[in-house]
Length: 470
Image: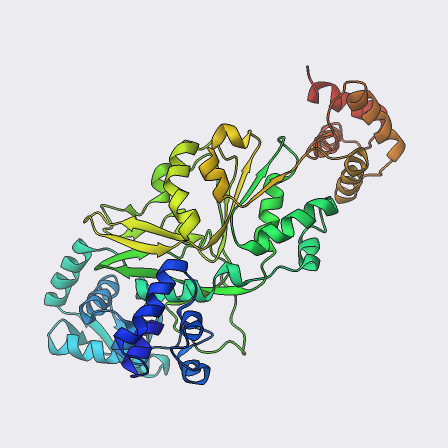
């Protein structure tokens, strides 16, 4: 149950008394507990037992917030692909308490859908195998097949959308402060000027959207990734959501990095996965469909869109303006969520529901922002930061660091001579991405010629002439 349901069930407040706080939350977002305190509807000491630092372990079916029929069908689908299964194994796979699984198996046995599987002599000597094992009966297999026909989701039990709202609000990225020292720490391996760090810090701590723009090859994508890694805390991400009888798979290994449990990690609802704040990156491959719920007609369940997977984290739209979806389509789709921090999704049944829109969105582009978006949209992007060409000293420092990375002797005079001939004379800008190729290419050439790579004037000429082809 979410916070509102727990408070009403405990009799702390009536539904009518809770209404002003729910209305205020809907209007201005934020965690319900804070709205209750701001409106003086409940004392802090009374509210404290209902506010948890982690999703509490469910004790009853009511705590799960799911219909029993859904859990029964999920058990049958899990068991359908196995010769036999124990209650302990099923509790592990569905991520719900063993006691609740025992009750579900007792019901299934009474209905004739499962039967106790006889043990052989070898298994009786194995302490692990002493847990009673069940297999599907013929009628159980028929019912399981019908369940799979309706929905082929087989995984942890989902989380109700109301509980998801609670935890996204409680873990909002707006509540996290990134210190200047931490930001400099994530940039320590890169040449990033202090004035840029000074601009990025407030933009990150605002929790709002950031527009990085400027000429290509000067670190916008790298900066966006570093912003994502600046967050050190962990958040709880549900494996799947349950909305209007439908299942939406949300957690995925590509965008969510689990945090290994420690002895200090408290027991929590295992339907949630403790992860680093997600970093979701969408480049030129992003389509309009990627921003909507994707219903798989064969598996009969949904995949969450990019922005939902990025909740409580960072969503990077790289090379903005070069996606398969036009900038205007994307901007029209997000003009309301960027303002209200609430998005709307639609099921294939036509039912619409709200989902939190809580992520730091970083747009990165080398195109002119005003050629991509109108004033109404750009006004909603609070922070627009120009990432320009590097200075000669910064270019030289980048060269030195890359030489150290590849263990090549760095001679600043040779590099300055190359800079004078290929940049100053040609009025070419110093681009942050340029130094890597003049170092990598001699390595490839030396490897082919079976020589030790060296950065001489001759080697740099050999590389720079085709690299700066005009």
